[in-house]
Length: 151
Image (cartoon, rainbow, N blue to C red; front, side):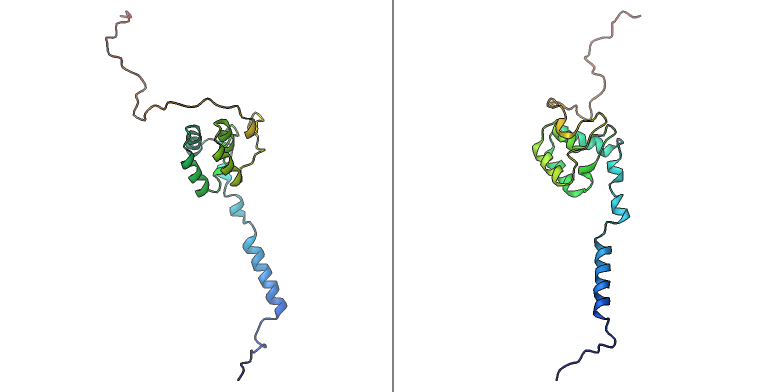
């Protein structure tokens, strides 16, 4: 025998299609929470994370920055107090791989900083060749006595 479907209890086809469309619309619509998810990153203010991002870009830590871009969706959109972000810094330090990755991750190529500069118009920074070790003291003791005739 053939099995028969009891259509008296089934949802009418048009109601099912409407319910499915409503479900898809809700599931694919950006939520208020996701719209504001990057707010902390895009606010024009300084933070430890933003300072570290600049340092890593300035010092050529490309692999670490690429990992950060992949792991944090808002990374590419961050802005510091001066309005600059990773794309500005990548142009400033001429890091082509970072520029490409940031653009692919949604960085705005037309974003202007506080002075009106877009990332591509950033002046090229000289290479950073020295970083003081973390345990470096502020004053260097060259030995010798303190005989500066002030007593």
